Length: 212
Image 1 (cartoon, rainbow, N blue to C red):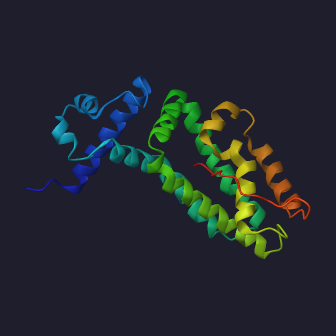
Image 2 (cartoon, rainbow, N blue to C red):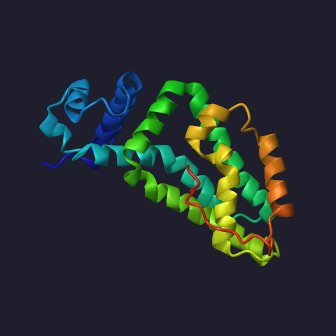
């Protein structure tokens, strides 16, 4: 008889919780799937029925990490509010969540960053999606006359560069005391008031992404 979907989902969550504890104790790189199977009291072959490899496990853990953040971004893109407030809330709501996660368990937060570095190909889709949502808000701002003389890609790149302390979790760990909502408000106002083309110095696009 096939295992009920609710049982499968519950077991997967139990495995993810065990993985949380293991990466907190050992670091993301150190634990193996065999170690994880032992921790949850099942054979490695049974564990592979739920997660076929460590990448699949990392993808599921990333899904748990990004789920709440994605809802925030999706809702804000279609929200009926001034575009400046929309961009502020796009970062501010996620800052609050990330700060709470960090303060709740700094070691686990850092371990998740380590896991993300080890499996960046897994989380890149989430990072790109955050860029997409932000670009949608910036495109709306451009329709209202902001960022004159700049192409959308250039605006996205410049905003990415300026917003790293408020969105990049690894940088936030070092600057958590500075990544406040009050400072964010000032930065957002500065972006809308001052970001426009300078004919003497063309804008280039560095390889930076908004992390989630």
